[in-house]
Length: 369
Image: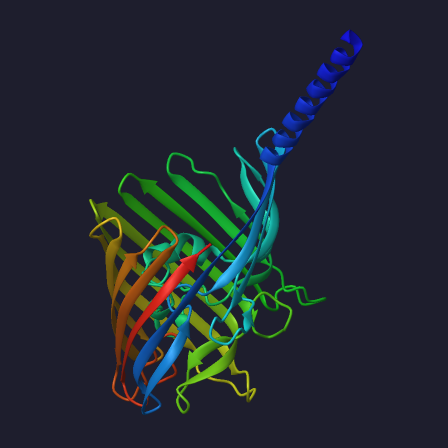
C-alpha cells in the first residue's frame, strides 16, 4: 500500500513538473492570428465625366490577415516574425501590400528585421497625417506622392528600430537592389526619428531611392505620376527623394496635428512607352484634428494643399466613426478635392475626374479579429 501510494505521489509530482514546464514553454513563445476586414459603399461624383456608385474594400484600412509570433531567447532577447497578406473583400483578389519579415530584438539595443517592410516615412512621418492615422486610404495626398498612405513597401530590406530613450527613438532601413553588378539600380534607404513628451509628439523621416521601377526584383516598383494627356501614367524614376516632418499635440480629447512633406522625382521614364518624361516635385502641407467626443464616437478632419508638377490641389475631408464594440466600428466620410484649372482631380482610391474637382462620400464597416 505504501509503495503504491509513493508511486502515485511520484507520478503526480512528475505530471505537475511537466505541466509547469509546458506552461513555461508556452509563455516564452507565442503565435497570434489577427487581421481586419473593411468594406463599404461609396459615391464619387466625377469619374471620367460620370457618377460612380461602388462597393469599397479598405477605404480606411486595407483588409488583411496576419500571423505574428515571438520566441523568448532569454537575457532580454527575442526572435520575432510577421506574415501579413492583403485582400479585396469585394473581389477576393490578393495583394502584396503588407509586411512580411523575421528578426531579432533586444530590450536595450532595439530590433533588427529582414524582409518586405514599411520604410521610415511610414514609421516616423505618416502618423502625423490623417491618411496615416484615423482617416486612412481616401485621405492620402495626391498620388500618395510622399507614401504617407504606405502605398508601397520595400523589398529586400533590412531595418533597425531603436528602443525609446527618454521619449526619443530612431530607426533606418536599407533595401537591396538584388542585381548582380547593379548594386545601386533600384535600391533604397531611409532614416527617421520620433520624440514624445506627454501630450507633444513629433517626428521626421527621409527616403532616397535610385532607379525605382527599373528592375522587377529591386527595392520598389514604379511610381504613378501626373501626365499631360491621360491624367496619370506609370513611371520609372532614376532618383527619388522624400522628406517629411510632423507634430501633434493632445488637448484633452482633441488632438491637433500638422505635417509637411516634399517629394522629388528626376530622371523620369514612362514605363509603358519608354519615353522620357518631365521631372516632378510635390510639396504637401496638411493640418488635421481628431476629437474623441465619447469613448465610442470620434470625429476627424483635415485640409491639405499640394503644389507640384506645375499645378496644385486643395483637399478637405471629414470622417465620423462609431465603435459598436471593441472590435467592430462603422464610419461615414467625405472627401472633396479641387485642382488648378486644367488639372484633373483624383481622390485616392478613385479614378481621375474629367474636371478639376471631385467629391466622394462613403459609409462602411470594419471588423478586427
